Amino acid sequence: MTSTQDLNTSTTAFDLAAYLADRQPRVEAALDAAIRPAYPDTIYAAMRYSLLAGGKRLRPILCLASCEAIGGNPDLAMPVACAVEMVHTMSLIHDDLPAMDNDDYRRGKLTNHKVYGEDIAILAGDGLLAYAFEYIAVHTKGVSADRVLRAVAHLARAVGADGLVGGQVVDLESEGKDITVETLTYIHNHKTGALFESSVVCGAIMAGATEPEIEKLTKFANNIGLAFQIIDDILDITATQAELGKTAGKDLEAQKATYPKLWGLAESKRQADKLVAEAKSILAEFGDRSQPLQALADYITDRKN
Amino acid sequence: MTSTQDLNTSTTAFDLAAYLADRQPRVEAALDAAIRPAYPDTIYAAMRYSLLAGGKRLRPILCLASCEAIGGNPDLAMPVACAVEMVHTMSLIHDDLPAMDNDDYRRGKLTNHKVYGEDIAILAGDGLLAYAFEYIAVHTKGVSADRVLRAVAHLARAVGADGLVGGQVVDLESEGKDITVETLTYIHNHKTGALFESSVVCGAIMAGATEPEIEKLTKFANNIGLAFQIIDDILDITATQAELGKTAGKDLEAQKATYPKLWGLAESKRQADKLVAEAKSILAEFGDRSQPLQALADYITDRKN
Image 1 (cartoon, rainbow over the protein chains, first blue to last red):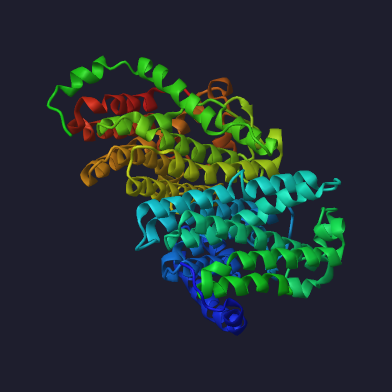
Image 2 (tube, chains in turn blue, purple):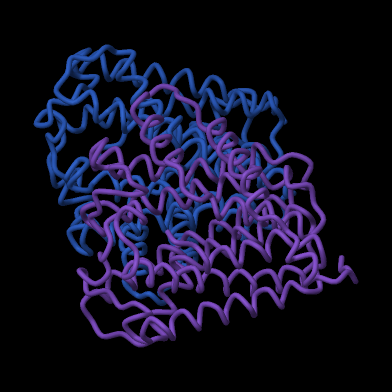
């Protein structure tokens, strides 16, 4: 599934803004359709409140783009793309709880527990997590059961103690301590990287990616996941609260270890750029079909929030 | 898959104590093997603390027994049986949190958040929930992917807003209010019944149950799930803390609606017995293979804790 076309020329020509303008509303509509208001009203309202609170929808869009990069119709990957965003939303709701990061604002809106209470926020997260797997299993069409099952396993692993949950635990245990770059990288590879990886890999699985393709996409995703987190750390220092839509300077206040603290701002930016450049070179052999993924990798380091 | 043998005679002869003495340690060993200590230590310790805290293992044993009732080797259902117990454990950890039922003891031991803190308890629940689906998907052997995927969907639905989570929400919203028998039954059909149903149905799916068989087992499970909850309500009033291994009289204290409060103790017991009798009659046509399920139905109403 490689192409001999001149990738550099076509990458330059690729219109990411138009691509996002097409994909973001499609993802929004799919998420809105995935969870409709129902009884018990409170829990569905709470799940929808956070799931439909906007955001860049980077993970589902990566998932669809990865499916395309392997030559699949992105519609095949829409259910798993929605599931990834449900899992991501769950992690945000639970991370924001008073017992965890204790955040009042997220994406410029009150956090879930500030609106619905802690009990409902915990349950809304649980509900979204469970529904993610139901949604993949029931709504994926035109993909063999063994592929769908593999995506279930991959996404579940990305969330659990060997993924997002594990990263969050080490993050919590590292607060106020001097930690090494290795520990910081563990935290981010698990807290952020695992779900980026799963977004990309699950999209590719839906399209029938080969093992070598999945390996390359895994490396691509790990690089951009880490770059994303480095940029996040940089923005926590340089961006204003209005730009971020959440409390700025939280990391410094919580005495959290960050890349700028360990490396300085300039070196952090350089490392992020290097990770993205590497990521893009990995995709070279995927040809024109990987243009959206390539452009998304750039987008991650150029963003302002 | 029916039998013409005299079911009554064989049911009488069935030795449930011996059956449980065989199954409980097998389930314990499978759970212990399913989640091993690993880095990050805290989260694996917290998950294992609650997962291996004993208990009757009723749900996984029902799952295995249901697989047998359809003529399947119970080993086929062991991964999904473990997954059901992981999900059940998650629900207990989250239910016990201060923001929810605020319980200090469970099964005679300190609750998860009393030992590990609220943050880790929330994450341990999330980790168990995610791992349940990974475990089914990765460790089920000798069953076609479409069956495994169906079990994933069934179990996920049993946990989510249309299952356990939904039941918990209506339960929280009903505290201190006068509620109808219909609402109370909604709460229990979702909070307890959904997971009983999924235990039984997923075990049967592993064995290749037909749709009519699944329908009958669903009805069986709903009946014993509700009977289980009625007995739970009765025991909250009549049993001592030592017998229960958890705080007794919590329901009265929290002004929770219960069946004994709505119906009185004697009528509650009668209704539970009726549900179990109905459940057993549904299984009549499954023949000898359903002896363990039949005996488990009786066990549920005879228990003292």
